[in-house]
Amino acid sequence: MLLVDGGLIFRAFFALPPMTDPHGRPVNAVYGFLAMLLRALAAARPSHLAVAMDVPVPENRRTRLYPAYKAHRPECPADLAPQFDLLRETLAALNIAVLGAPGYEADDLMGTMARLAEEGGMEVTILTGDRDNLQLLSGRTTVQYVKKMNQTVTYDVPRFVQEWGILPGQLVDLKGLAGDASDNIPGIRGIGTKTAVKLLQEFATLEQVLAQAHTQRGRLRQLLEEGREVALLSKQLATIDRHVPGLCAPADCALRLDRAGGAAALEALRFRSLLGAFQRAIG
Image 1 (cartoon, rainbow, N blue to C red):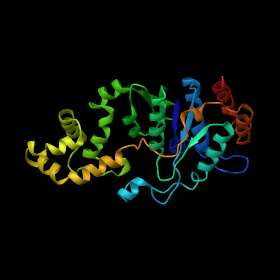
Image 2 (cartoon, one colour):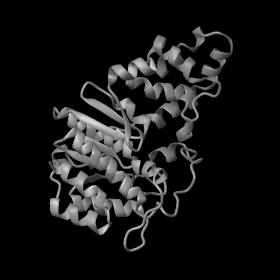
Image 3 (tube, one colour):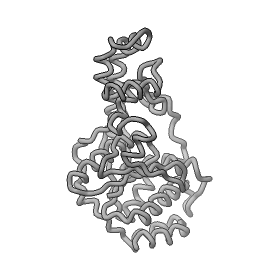
Image 4 (cartoon, rainbow, N blue to C red):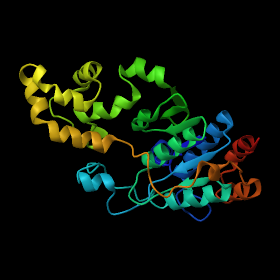
């Protein structure tokens, strides 16, 4: 199964110059997203495929816990906003499953679907530009991390351990201690990544680090004791929910691209340069 992070539309929007379709609608983000998707399809040849997209709601489960979550991010650019619905329409024309659930983020959708697929004996690849998904790495799940539009890095468990010094499942413990500026997750002020990794290598989990705070000396002990509640909240914010209710079954995401409908949709948007990639994806 190939799971594609709908958040890659942001990466595409900022990477490509403005483009419009024959109706004057902005389409650069949709074009870039589809280019990445079709390239991944041609390379991975998955039997199952789904794109996970956030469903806009006034607040999600994380902002209810911590209103400042992602609050520092700028508003969606005016030329990008209408491209979300256009992407959904185009994916429907291609007959590609789109996952969505109000109150949950794309990471939660992919985490849940990856779990379901693994339980069904499937191998999973996650295409994303968000390192949060590295916590989903397992013996059956790999992550294709998009560094640039045409450049990805493949992570499996050994590569993650070599690069980060901890296990994939400890990524949420790391963020509980050190925070994550990109999502405005606070962590414990004064504790950085190196210190957090060292603590986790010794005590394994955030909870054990906090339970052993009295064994630390000086300022570190003080930080851990005083930062207990914010650390536990930060870990909760960083943890991908792998039990989102109401999602379709992996079997419903079997890849059956609509040759005629997909080609017509790409032609209507004047994405003629993607027609070849679409044909290669169909095989």
